[in-house]
Length: 583
Ligand SMILES: Cc1ncc(C[n+]2csc(CCOP(=O)(O)OP(=O)(O)O)c2C)c(N)n1
Image (tube, rainbow, N blue to C red; front, side, top):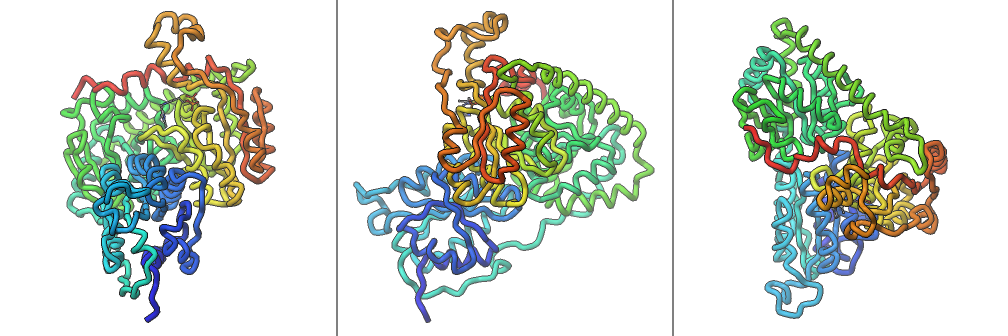
């Protein structure tokens, strides 16, 4: 039998899993792997930094429901991948990271002075769902099978397999490969029908049920099911930050997170909460009062694909292990039989009340759009994006104040059109997330709203876009400062002076100011379309020109740096990092 590289075993197994793309930077230490990918119909997409490869894989996975695969080479390549591992694992995206490692003979244990070696598994084990090293060629397939089993178990995240160069690149007898149904569960987890009945019973009896949806809806791709359920129950839907846009936001049931006050009200009014695929973490105020009704007075039904999440942060009166894609239709069926028993008039009138509140809050937020001064107030940017881009455009929001403005002045009429690092707030990740989204959906418009601080982390990836014919539009909010931290610093230094004058003298702030990078010029030097604007009308024109140009573009937007610091919702979010006082 013809001998094959150890790395080719991995390539073959990825094909069995239906993998079409691998993101990463090539290196001789895994030549046996990457040089065989094309043979199995797998394309390599190469960014200019390993952390970008991990974010691209993570976003590709999140948007498509497929496995995101990336690679990094031993020592420095893996060191560079680490930030991506931390973020994608926290965000819960299904990523398989394949790394090379120095040859076994000198690295296990480290002989001392081994070049490009560190304890990759030791480090990544602490940052991921699962991480192991292959120790002999005949265990490659077994360990990849194990990695894939772990990957599809419970909440998604990063799994990592470390393969020594001598195993990657040595020719071995091809092992017998198993079909994927032979090594991991293929069926969805169906809910226990009695539990579905019990859930339906509670929801039918409820005076005012609400739904709280998390990223679990995205991973289950259960967007339509969620909308149907909201309709049947006449229940308002709030989401975790990370689940922004799981329900079409033009829906009368949708109460996106910028409407913090309404979220808090709904969560206090509801007598029953149906939690679908959410841990109810810190950005959901842990499910506690005063942001939610006291747990003793509010029933919670929690459904999750991961056992370890059930009853994690808020006591569950009914905890159900199930795939949401199966649970929601089963629940709808039960509810439809009992429609007449639900007090829908009351629920509908509550919904109308919340919608009125939403409209009046919107009016309040939109007052800022009357500000036509130059340079512009940041609110115009997301507002104009919403007007110019098609409804199914994918919006990547990076971090800092830029992300807050973007969140408050956008509404997403199509589900699953938002990407961010809502759990990690990782500045700069948006650059490669936009590339991952563009790979996932080449026909759709992708744009990324990002601060000038964050854009400075990875601007080289514009060249990746050009080289790979990816066409994201980057909108860089230029305030020449670390905006979000500047305001908190000023408040910490001199709260009264800051509140009165909106800023402190330059001499008093500590290292929060930045110089200028002309990101549009930098982009042009890499072959992208570039424009610089400071007025809303010019931004609209530049955006249309960028779309018409049909290639990667960077629009450098000068905004008023003082107004940029004073984001909407500041007071609402102020207390978020403190433990809520109630139960
Ligand atoms: C990688 C990373 N480093 C540091 C931080 C802490 N941090 C949060 S917001 C912020 C300032 C962001 O500045 P910029 O990207 O220009 O956006 P702005 O707040 O000005 O809109 C910093 C440094 C972070 N979230 N991520």
